Each structure stands twice: as C-alpha cells, then as structure tokens.
Image (cartoon, rainbow, N blue to C red):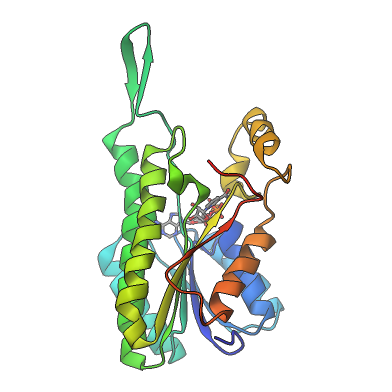
Length: 253
Ligand SMILES: NC(=O)c1ccc[n+]([C@@H]2O[C@H](COP(=O)([O-])OP(=O)(O)OC[C@H]3O[C@@H](n4cnc5c(N)ncnc54)[C@H](O)[C@@H]3O)[C@@H](O)[C@H]2O)c1
C-alpha cells in the first residue's frame, strides 16, 4: 500500500508511539484520524501533523467502549470518505504479580480490576477497532491494512499476567484476521516492540531500566521512530500478512 494520500486511523495517538507514528505517516503524506482518550495529547499530535502538512482530525475515543468505537469508525469513514489502514496502538499496563507471597503467606494478588482494565483496552479494544474498521473497509470496497502493536511481553513476562495475555491475544487474532479478511483485500499484521523510550516506559524505575538495557544485545531501548519505521514497513509491504514483526534489539523474554 502506498502511504501517500491514504486514510490511516491511529489509536492512542495522544502521546508516545502513537504520536511518533502519526508524525512519521504525516511526513509521508497520509491523511490521519487520530484517536485517544487524552484530548490534550491529541491536540498536540494534531498540531504536529498539520505542521508537517498533513490533513488530520482528532476523535475522542475509548477503544474499550463498543458503542463509542462503532460510532467513531463510522464517523471517520464519513469524514474522510475512506479508511485504508488501522494502527491498533492504544494500550495500558497494570503490572503486578499474580500472587505476592512471603513466608508461605499471600500478601497481595493481581486484582480482577487490573486484569479487566488491561484486557479491556489492550485486547477488547483491538478486537472492537478491527471489527469496525473491517466493516468500513468492506463497505468502501478498497481493501486495507490492520497493523496492531503487540509486544515482546506476549511470550509471557514477569509481573505482566494481564498484559502478556492481551499481547499474545493480539498475535493470534492477527493470524485469524489475515485468514478471514484476505478475501476482502485486507491484510493484518502485528508488530512486537521491545522496550521503547515512551512515557509508558518512563514510569518504570531507572534501576529496572538499567537491568533491561543490560539484557538487550544492542544495549539500549528502542527509539519510538524505530518502531514507527516498522509500521511503515507493514503498511507498504503488500506480502506481509498474518505475522508478527519483532523489533526488540535482539532481546527475547
Ligand atoms: N513502550 C514500550 O516499551 C512498548 C513495548 C511494547 C509494546 N508497546 C505497546 O505500544 C503501544 C503504545 O505504547 P506507548 O509506550 O506509546 O504508551 P503510552 O502510555 O506512552 O501511550 C499510550 C496512549 O494510549 C492512550 N490510551 C490509553 N487507554 C486508551 C483507551 N482506552 N482508548 C484510547 N486510547 C487510550 C493513552 O492516552 C496514550 O496516549 C501500546 O499498545 C503498548 O502496549 C509499548
């Protein structure tokens, strides 16, 4: 798919990887539908995309809310008269051990609330946005691409029962969608970044980050531009389908 002139929806576009991806696609002439719950962040991303000369609009959207996702994707297709690609980027973490125990006594458990919050945004949100994007793409008859941000943590990461489950789910949904949607001219692929310098990771203690850097063969975290570069690859390569592109500096969990 040639990016220039294509309408791309980016969820979680209000900061971090979503914002960098928006800027990267703006530089390549995409038309951008920027979605997030963070309106201030969205306004700044819009400013940056417009400064790069791109046509862009913002949409307040909680990806875990079915009615809102249905309404916004219909609005995006109406507003742009097109919908060529979806970048499922919105995501949250609520890390914690499944059970935290000392001297044979469990002191803390991962709450159902933390489980539901992460599954709601990182898994249900990706399902809902892809379902609605696919409906619009099929109606418009011009095919498209679904690119979802999974994670290195999909292999199963310490302290991330909820997040690992969601990110593994993205990988398997991607394979399913590649099989189901190809007949409509829609490709589906995922990207599994390693630890990347965004506000999400900036919340982690510096000591933990140092430990991670020491384990990465390249000795550093990814820059958001390097992950956005793989989004460009997934959009542009018409034979990349049903696979997870790993961009992790060589670190395997
Ligand atoms: N940073 C990393 O190391 C890393 C590694 C692997 C994968 N990822 C994934 O990359 C994606 C982007 O992460 P990031 O590091 O830029 O995170 P971030 O926290 O910096 O940004 C995430 C954005 O998603 C938005 N968001 C949160 N909940 C939402 C909801 N319900 N509806 C709509 N928007 C919502 C936030 O407002 C924020 O703007 C996530 O899916 C994350 O899991 C990040």
